[in-house]
Length: 298
Image 1 (cartoon, helix red, strand yellow):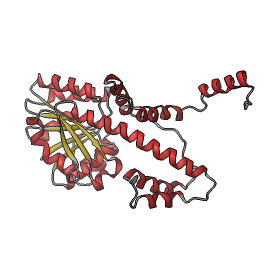
Image 2 (tube, rainbow, N blue to C red; image 1 turned 135 degrees about the vertical axis):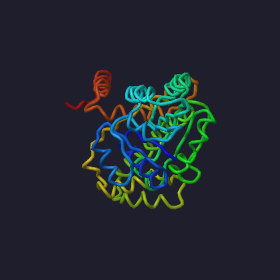
Image 3 (spheres, rainbow, N blue to C red; image 1 turned 90 degrees about the vertical axis):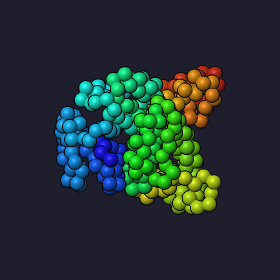
């Protein structure tokens, strides 16, 4: 199939490569032309303007966006809509809010264009082992694109979740679960690291990968991280970002009256990691000194 990949960041570039390796004709485009030129050296076709990209695609065109969620995605859609024709499809593969995806689906449908939301998981390893692909959209819009989805995904890793927005909804909850899993590993390994025993944490992580009920790909990656950075992780700063999906998952849980304490606390822990020093902790220390005479540190 013909497919354009717009946005050649860590995910977009490797997805373009995997599709190219899978026999699809990929036209790559990036705001920074250097990234487009770089990937063209690997045999992929490139374009340097949106109009040029649309012109070289076979109709009905498929334009897959891999740009940051929010304003960047909105602006990119608005840029491509006037260039496309009825029957063409825009796929949003970023981590968009599912409410935005439903709105964009309705907006494009009025213009005769198709819109498909695709949650994609796999990170920098996706080129080698494939991506989990969670797709939302009308069945008649999704079905023609399935050769692309099944090329990106490993066997069993693609699912058409349902109507518009459902792909990004499922990916949102996926990432919320990821927050909780990562936090559990972080807490457990901090206990091990702080204990009196001279434990080889990389060896523990590797051993747990065989037969235990907590084995997972994340645990495997933790073992690799210890090998790269050492058990003290001394070259890393404990500053953890969040890209929005955890917040949206917590908000959705509240809207649905679903208790989600693990995901919520894992999100709040990420907020705490960005503080050089916690003002709230200072308040707690001051209160303990006032009511109990407990020692404080200056």
